[in-house]
Length: 600
Ligand code: GLC
Ligand code: CA
Image 1 (cartoon, rainbow, N blue to C red):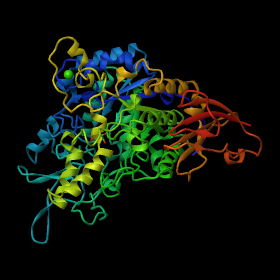
Image 2: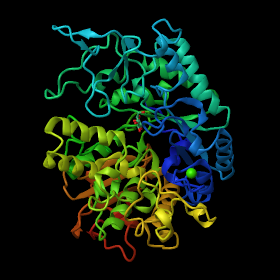
Image 3: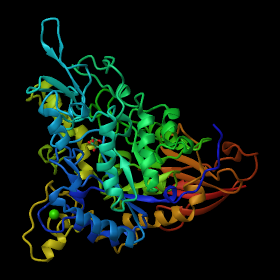
Image 4: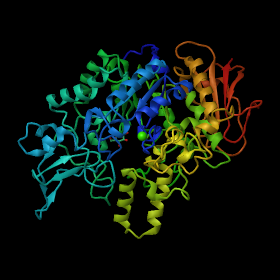
């Protein structure tokens, strides 16, 4: 492949703010976030300096998986609002010079979608073939078995659901209520494009975050997965059902439509450790997707056989840095593009995972990560609440019954099944893992104002005299300490620092967004020291030094040779620090981060 220059594009420089509709802002006091609530906060979002908003699924859905189970692509989940409210949101976003992306969930639908209801109605339904149906297998003793040994993505159960009425199984890589569409059928694909994509593109949306984009094409014959978890009846099969034989044909077909609208795309790309496979999706030459989310960084510390079968902070700083290096490496010598993110609705809070969320250090930790992300190459994503340094809900004030995500409770069910429901030690171990990693932490109602009811989630309704209901998910016990209102006018707040960092990134886009990343001390257990060098032309680089410990640390100025330059003196000019006051070159306070321009 010829290496072309790193083309500049508006979306490469953009910072994209992700919104989880159920938990962002409740305008009418019913305890559920809604579209008018989002619209009412657009000025706040714009004030962060972000360029794009991405709205998680707001479609009509029975909400088994929080809207990732869609019953009708062309309608809105009523508690969130209406298609008209979406039109208002799109218009108002554009009026503030921002763009808007939606979530495109087309690997599966809800079992309540009209297509599936028809498919399920009988074996000779005209839509039978729109989903993936297979007859049962039989064991030696004649027992009914699912067609293969694949484990569903949630909990430990099979990826197949038996349908009593028509006597066959259907495939669901996620929950049983999320049947997988059959992409082999061209008629199905056409319907998906029209209903899920064109309907919204015609209403002015600017792009899509494409859910589980590499699962549409399943391997022929749907073979068994190798047994990697011998104690379990069903096996992790992601390496088999991701990146199937017709993936690029399908994504190419989608892209032909999307590019007619100039829509941007970011695809979720699990189970793709091989970087050349990633490039098949995102190299400019391949014309498939603009960007992808690789899971390397956010999966750091996950258990091997099940992500929650682990203990808190089960990784080292070199592991974390190696993961960052892999995703940054995607643009090295290639014409692809990468993304920068530490949080989304599927992960716990980064301050708790990667720094220290104690009252003493959490503000510093949040700033450290903000500074790190602002200096990494690729398109940057910011998740709601991250800009105020939200932390995980503490174990002692937020009991396990408050966790509502099916991924969490199916895991607890699996543990209880294996070890007995009254095995306190194992259940507590599961709780510890969930307190550290569960998806629930990012889904707590956004703490707008710690002084208002429920952390200010329904503040406008409360002010209007509405009797506001308790939020759908219990609000954060620390909302009194960590909220937007408490930080808005505080120049030393995490919020103020994020605004500063987004400005800083935009101003130095050459180095920070487009530059080449190099980790100078990959083995250092405490410090992350990297440089960003200008791509393709000489000139100053940026040196970033980050202290991931609660101790004061010293560091040595890297020699020119470490950067691959001829030996000579190195000049440093301090340009940014997480700490106010004078920067002490060579010394980092606990969780301090510093940025220098570095020349010779
Ligand atoms: C993606 C979503 C996640 C959802 C799953 C199934 O991974 O981000 O929230 O549960 O797809 O649609
Ligand atoms: Ca509401």
